[in-house]
Image (cartoon, rainbow, N blue to C red; front, side, top):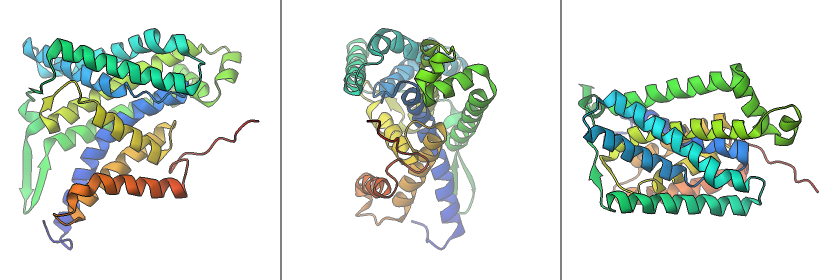
Length: 302
């Protein structure tokens, strides 16, 4: 490990944190969008990422160029999100929260088992183009994986475009209104069903984009690969403030920075407990800010 006083050490940690945080932010935004509109913690979000990865693999095996593979994976993720909303979630809209939560678990288990039947439970290599796997060496002890640049650039473009959409377009403003107060939004003539479908489509596409970067790091895919990403997305949303897009983005980058900092600063014999320390810090954050960094607690109506 480089000396802590070395500027190169801190620059390297910053590079790693931005790359990892960009992936977490993209994952968390999709989760936050669905929660904002439906008050649903969609644990099937991770299986959407898994399905998107397999769609990409199938397109690669058919010899398609990688840009078209990426677009196909994103489109497939968006389409799957829309199907999930129409088939699994729309019929139970307005049901108690526990029904929605159990429904999301059922969808996740169903999709994972369908993937096992279709592709087998074993891991498969996912060949990535060199442009995503190259590592630059600017000098000294600095290493710049190109995937970090692509993840950061992709996140900035996607999240910036999403920000413009929700603040400058009628559909985006309708989505914000539905998330703030669904009843008032309906009274104003906003079609909640259309807004919900849009939230699922955009959120799932964000998941599809995130899983491309995630897979480039891991190198393999398998039917159970969605669990860890959706758990990271959930933690990021909790840290930033559940139900808010800025909170999800901030939470993603904070989680990435926290993991990288612990990875770089902890002694070799303790670094294996990194995730346990992350969740311990999460508990401390919630003790101080129960609604997350940018969140708030809704007053209970009696």
